[in-house]
Image (tube, rainbow, N blue to C red; front, side, top):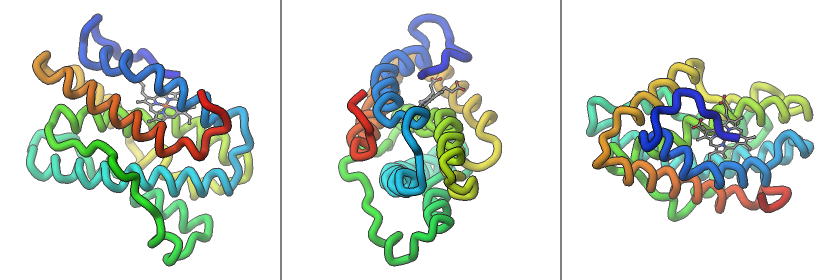
Length: 201
Ligand code: HEM
Protein backbone atom coordinates (compact mmCIF):
# COMPACT_ATOMS: atom_id res chain seq x y z
CA UNK A 1 0.00 0.00 0.00
CA UNK A 2 1.22 3.52 -0.58
CA UNK A 3 0.89 6.12 2.14
CA UNK A 4 -0.37 9.62 1.60
CA UNK A 5 1.53 11.44 4.28
CA UNK A 6 2.96 14.82 3.37
CA UNK A 7 1.28 14.81 -0.02
CA UNK A 8 1.41 18.29 -1.54
CA UNK A 9 -1.41 19.75 -3.60
CA UNK A 10 -2.52 18.09 -6.78
CA UNK A 11 0.22 18.14 -9.39
CA UNK A 12 3.07 18.40 -6.84
CA UNK A 13 6.00 16.17 -7.77
CA UNK A 14 5.58 13.86 -4.79
CA UNK A 15 1.90 13.38 -5.55
CA UNK A 16 2.72 12.72 -9.18
CA UNK A 17 5.44 10.20 -8.45
CA UNK A 18 3.15 8.42 -6.00
CA UNK A 19 0.32 8.27 -8.49
CA UNK A 20 2.60 7.07 -11.28
CA UNK A 21 4.03 4.20 -9.23
CA UNK A 22 1.04 3.19 -7.10
CA UNK A 23 -0.18 0.38 -9.37
CA UNK A 24 3.27 -1.20 -9.63
CA UNK A 25 3.68 -0.95 -5.88
CA UNK A 26 0.34 -2.70 -5.35
CA UNK A 27 1.37 -5.49 -7.74
CA UNK A 28 4.73 -5.94 -6.00
CA UNK A 29 3.12 -5.96 -2.58
CA UNK A 30 0.44 -8.46 -3.65
CA UNK A 31 2.90 -10.64 -5.58
CA UNK A 32 5.50 -10.85 -2.82
CA UNK A 33 2.79 -11.10 -0.17
CA UNK A 34 5.05 -11.07 2.91
CA UNK A 35 2.10 -11.15 5.31
CA UNK A 36 0.30 -14.01 3.57
CA UNK A 37 3.15 -16.42 2.94
CA UNK A 38 5.75 -18.00 5.20
CA UNK A 39 8.73 -15.67 4.82
CA UNK A 40 11.28 -18.24 5.96
CA UNK A 41 15.08 -18.24 5.82
CA UNK A 42 15.13 -19.58 2.27
CA UNK A 43 12.76 -16.87 0.98
CA UNK A 44 14.70 -14.28 2.94
CA UNK A 45 18.06 -15.39 1.52
CA UNK A 46 16.65 -15.08 -2.01
CA UNK A 47 15.15 -11.68 -1.19
CA UNK A 48 18.53 -10.44 0.10
CA UNK A 49 20.39 -11.78 -2.95
CA UNK A 50 17.95 -10.20 -5.39
CA UNK A 51 17.66 -6.86 -3.62
CA UNK A 52 21.47 -6.64 -3.45
CA UNK A 53 21.42 -7.02 -7.24
CA UNK A 54 19.27 -3.89 -7.49
CA UNK A 55 20.86 -1.87 -4.70
CA UNK A 56 24.50 -2.34 -5.72
CA UNK A 57 24.35 -0.66 -9.16
CA UNK A 58 21.78 1.94 -8.09
CA UNK A 59 23.77 2.97 -5.03
CA UNK A 60 26.99 3.23 -7.08
CA UNK A 61 25.18 5.62 -9.40
CA UNK A 62 23.77 7.61 -6.47
CA UNK A 63 27.29 7.88 -4.99
CA UNK A 64 28.42 9.34 -8.32
CA UNK A 65 25.61 11.90 -8.11
CA UNK A 66 26.51 12.83 -4.54
CA UNK A 67 30.17 13.28 -5.50
CA UNK A 68 29.13 15.83 -8.12
CA UNK A 69 26.24 17.60 -6.33
CA UNK A 70 27.02 19.20 -2.95
CA UNK A 71 23.29 19.50 -2.22
CA UNK A 72 22.66 15.79 -2.82
CA UNK A 73 20.88 13.70 -0.23
CA UNK A 74 23.12 11.74 2.16
CA UNK A 75 23.42 8.66 0.00
CA UNK A 76 26.05 7.04 2.25
CA UNK A 77 23.56 6.94 5.14
CA UNK A 78 20.93 5.56 2.73
CA UNK A 79 23.17 2.76 1.41
CA UNK A 80 21.86 -0.76 2.00
CA UNK A 81 23.74 -2.99 -0.45
CA UNK A 82 26.48 -3.42 2.16
CA UNK A 83 23.82 -4.27 4.76
CA UNK A 84 22.32 -6.89 2.43
CA UNK A 85 25.73 -8.60 2.26
CA UNK A 86 26.03 -8.45 6.05
CA UNK A 87 22.52 -9.92 6.39
CA UNK A 88 23.47 -12.75 4.04
CA UNK A 89 26.58 -13.45 6.13
CA UNK A 90 24.38 -13.71 9.23
CA UNK A 91 22.45 -16.44 7.38
CA UNK A 92 25.73 -18.29 6.78
CA UNK A 93 26.33 -17.32 3.15
CA UNK A 94 30.07 -17.69 2.56
CA UNK A 95 32.43 -15.44 0.62
CA UNK A 96 32.38 -17.70 -2.45
CA UNK A 97 28.58 -17.50 -2.66
CA UNK A 98 28.62 -13.74 -2.07
CA UNK A 99 31.07 -13.37 -4.96
CA UNK A 100 28.53 -15.15 -7.20
CA UNK A 101 25.72 -12.66 -6.57
CA UNK A 102 24.39 -11.10 -9.78
CA UNK A 103 23.57 -7.46 -10.35
CA UNK A 104 20.34 -6.68 -12.16
CA UNK A 105 21.30 -5.86 -15.75
CA UNK A 106 19.71 -2.85 -17.36
CA UNK A 107 18.64 -1.10 -14.13
CA UNK A 108 18.15 2.54 -15.13
CA UNK A 109 21.06 4.35 -13.49
CA UNK A 110 20.45 7.96 -12.39
CA UNK A 111 22.91 10.60 -13.54
CA UNK A 112 21.01 13.85 -13.03
CA UNK A 113 19.64 15.23 -9.77
CA UNK A 114 16.06 14.70 -10.98
CA UNK A 115 16.67 11.04 -11.82
CA UNK A 116 18.55 10.53 -8.55
CA UNK A 117 15.62 11.92 -6.56
CA UNK A 118 13.21 9.64 -8.40
CA UNK A 119 15.47 6.71 -7.57
CA UNK A 120 15.77 7.74 -3.91
CA UNK A 121 11.98 7.92 -3.71
CA UNK A 122 11.77 4.23 -4.63
CA UNK A 123 14.71 3.00 -2.55
CA UNK A 124 13.91 5.03 0.57
CA UNK A 125 10.21 4.29 0.27
CA UNK A 126 10.93 0.58 0.11
CA UNK A 127 12.37 0.77 3.63
CA UNK A 128 8.86 1.68 4.86
CA UNK A 129 7.48 -1.59 3.50
CA UNK A 130 10.69 -3.21 4.76
CA UNK A 131 9.30 -2.93 8.27
CA UNK A 132 6.43 -5.23 7.33
CA UNK A 133 8.72 -7.72 5.61
CA UNK A 134 11.00 -7.72 8.65
CA UNK A 135 8.03 -8.50 10.88
CA UNK A 136 6.96 -11.40 8.64
CA UNK A 137 10.51 -12.73 8.41
CA UNK A 138 11.17 -12.62 12.14
CA UNK A 139 7.80 -14.29 12.79
CA UNK A 140 8.90 -17.13 10.48
CA UNK A 141 12.19 -17.60 12.35
CA UNK A 142 14.62 -15.38 10.42
CA UNK A 143 17.09 -13.78 12.86
CA UNK A 144 16.44 -10.03 13.26
CA UNK A 145 20.15 -9.52 12.66
CA UNK A 146 19.66 -10.72 9.08
CA UNK A 147 17.02 -8.04 8.37
CA UNK A 148 19.08 -4.86 8.70
CA UNK A 149 19.02 -4.06 4.97
CA UNK A 150 15.23 -3.93 4.85
CA UNK A 151 14.98 -0.80 6.93
CA UNK A 152 18.54 0.52 6.68
CA UNK A 153 20.66 2.44 9.14
CA UNK A 154 19.01 4.20 12.10
CA UNK A 155 17.31 7.47 11.13
CA UNK A 156 15.09 6.12 8.38
CA UNK A 157 12.14 8.33 9.35
CA UNK A 158 14.28 11.45 9.18
CA UNK A 159 15.77 10.37 5.83
CA UNK A 160 12.32 9.71 4.37
CA UNK A 161 11.21 13.21 5.39
CA UNK A 162 14.34 14.65 3.74
CA UNK A 163 13.64 12.66 0.58
CA UNK A 164 10.03 13.79 0.33
CA UNK A 165 11.06 17.39 1.12
CA UNK A 166 13.63 17.30 -1.70
CA UNK A 167 10.96 15.92 -4.04
CA UNK A 168 8.61 18.68 -2.95
CA UNK A 169 11.23 21.27 -3.92
CA UNK A 170 11.68 19.94 -7.47
CA UNK A 171 10.72 22.47 -10.11
CA UNK A 172 8.10 21.78 -12.74
CA UNK A 173 10.79 21.56 -15.43
CA UNK A 174 12.30 18.47 -13.77
CA UNK A 175 9.09 16.77 -12.68
CA UNK A 176 8.77 14.47 -15.66
CA UNK A 177 12.32 13.21 -15.28
CA UNK A 178 11.77 12.43 -11.59
CA UNK A 179 8.61 10.50 -12.39
CA UNK A 180 10.26 8.63 -15.29
CA UNK A 181 13.17 7.55 -13.07
CA UNK A 182 10.85 6.32 -10.31
CA UNK A 183 8.67 4.42 -12.78
CA UNK A 184 11.72 2.80 -14.40
CA UNK A 185 13.22 1.88 -11.02
CA UNK A 186 9.94 0.33 -9.91
CA UNK A 187 9.76 -1.60 -13.21
CA UNK A 188 13.26 -2.97 -12.65
CA UNK A 189 12.22 -4.11 -9.15
CA UNK A 190 9.11 -5.79 -10.47
CA UNK A 191 11.05 -7.65 -13.16
CA UNK A 192 14.05 -8.61 -11.01
CA UNK A 193 12.01 -9.67 -7.95
CA UNK A 194 9.49 -11.68 -9.99
CA UNK A 195 11.14 -15.07 -9.17
CA UNK A 196 10.10 -14.45 -5.55
CA UNK A 197 6.46 -13.66 -6.28
CA UNK A 198 3.90 -16.14 -5.04
CA UNK A 199 1.44 -14.88 -7.62
CA UNK A 200 1.32 -12.12 -10.19
CA UNK A 201 -0.10 -9.10 -8.43
C1 HEM B 1 7.13 -6.74 -0.36
C2 HEM B 1 6.05 -6.15 -0.21
C3 HEM B 1 5.87 -4.71 0.19
C4 HEM B 1 5.00 -4.28 1.12
C5 HEM B 1 4.07 -5.13 1.95
C6 HEM B 1 5.09 -2.85 1.17
C7 HEM B 1 4.39 -2.04 2.02
C8 HEM B 1 4.49 -0.69 2.13
C9 HEM B 1 3.85 0.16 3.10
C10 HEM B 1 2.94 -0.35 4.22
C11 HEM B 1 4.20 1.43 2.86
C12 HEM B 1 3.71 2.68 3.60
C13 HEM B 1 4.47 2.83 4.89
C14 HEM B 1 4.11 4.09 5.65
O1 HEM B 1 3.48 5.02 5.11
O2 HEM B 1 4.51 4.16 6.81
C15 HEM B 1 5.07 1.41 1.73
C16 HEM B 1 5.61 2.51 1.16
C17 HEM B 1 6.41 2.48 0.04
N1 HEM B 1 6.94 1.37 -0.58
FE1 HEM B 1 6.42 -0.51 -0.21
N2 HEM B 1 6.02 -2.43 0.26
C18 HEM B 1 6.55 -3.54 -0.34
C19 HEM B 1 7.52 -3.58 -1.30
C20 HEM B 1 8.08 -2.48 -1.88
C21 HEM B 1 9.10 -2.51 -2.89
C22 HEM B 1 9.79 -3.77 -3.43
C23 HEM B 1 9.34 -1.22 -3.23
C24 HEM B 1 10.32 -0.70 -4.23
C25 HEM B 1 10.29 -1.01 -5.48
C26 HEM B 1 8.47 -0.38 -2.44
C27 HEM B 1 8.40 0.99 -2.51
C28 HEM B 1 7.68 1.79 -1.66
C29 HEM B 1 7.63 3.23 -1.74
C30 HEM B 1 8.30 4.11 -2.77
C31 HEM B 1 6.85 3.66 -0.66
C32 HEM B 1 6.51 5.10 -0.29
C33 HEM B 1 5.14 5.44 -0.78
C34 HEM B 1 4.77 6.87 -0.45
O3 HEM B 1 4.36 7.15 0.68
O4 HEM B 1 4.94 7.71 -1.35
N3 HEM B 1 7.73 -1.18 -1.62
N4 HEM B 1 5.25 0.11 1.31
